[in-house]
Length: 298
Length: 298
Image 1 (cartoon, rainbow over the protein chains, first blue to last red):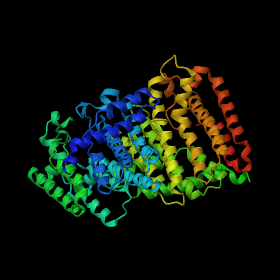
Image 2 (image 1 turned 60 degrees about the vertical axis):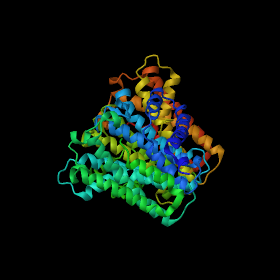
Image 3 (image 1 turned 180 degrees about the vertical axis):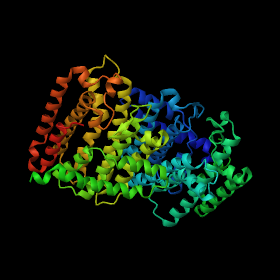
Image 4 (image 1 turned 135 degrees about the vertical axis):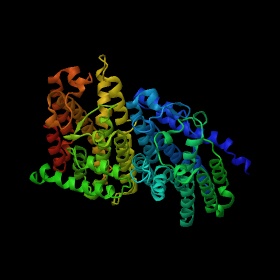
């Protein structure tokens, strides 16, 4: 059973599904430059953590892969758009992303801004209109969940707070938690909810348990990013390393010390696993993925 | 009847409706800087041409104002996000917008990028979840129409083409038409469709007639923008003037001559009015608005 749930086997399958959807849309884009920049960015995929979370959560509730493809591709598009805009010279000014030059390094800043915008819109377009058996009320709930997670009440606000407050040496732990939740946790949490929404599950207890699970892994994920930014290498990370230090950002390891940060990651993953323990064998793929996340080196 | 349909009377009413919705969302944004930048941009409204087109089209089919508020605010948010990103130094590098310093001049480039992103997401969030009696199938159709008009198959592609092809002196008239349709026409046309979708109209003849109407005023609108960019003043326009010339862009007046451009605008508006002639007195507000657009000086 577990062997069937190996991520090494599943990731290429899921990845091929996403590529197929992306190619379908990319083939019809009327601007060659925009198409190439979108293609370049999407054909250089990351770890697909967010789509994997969606597929693994959907698996618990027997959601169909065809239905799961919609939120999985939408979230990957939103994540990719946010990376392109984050990497811009006026933001993180990063040269490297997923081991290759960033979008603006290859296509110029103007096309990079538009590429981010286009991926952002395409995500919503797919949820609204890509063919699937997904009922229309679920599609709308997905758009509501995703926009709430990535817009001015989620990721966009988190990134603004990241830039404006994380240089502040009197930063409170409450504010740090808020920023982490908004800039990273909200989209990760939304993946769990989107996976459930791909099925016909309407159980309030499940919703609450998965919310707790999503909250824990979202926060853990951002703390790990900070740890890796300090301890990793650009070669392994595939992106610039040490940017937080360079930008004098207050992060979890800076505020609490490296060991406490590592302990916190461990305890958050344990809390996450506890929250979905009651789901039994159906949640095994999500557990496998959670353990992969805990051990990640990039 | 016509006096009740005066835009001088209606614009403040519609404007107040949009402000109420914007304020409702702005009040809950967790990043002060993001909130202020969004507020600054939205509290300095333009001519509200796109929302007016939506309200005027909805009026034909007896759509409720509460339902029309959703696409009207969503389209204004999308339009505003596109202006913020267009004005960035890497794009048009504009200092002035609606008579005030552009978003990036006031809040810096990073916050301007995020403000555009946040307005973009908020538009979709409002269509998906803002309270109204609008049925869920209509909401989804609206998100499909708006994303198709403003994403990689519409506005975003048009802007990319604008940057990459309009400096080309061998530009064909076909390509110019395509760029104009994508960068301006698609969103203007979508407004007409969104107005109809706010009602329960499902008549195919209406759809086709309004599509023709939207296509004509969309193209006319962009040609007028080019004319005004050459002949207007920054003081009246409220934005930088002469940018096309400065950026050596091929525009309709450059390709066909100023008089031909002006004649084309007249004939497009006439064709637009012909297309909705059969709709009788219910379309009077849309006619009044069309005539206002024809006479616009900014």
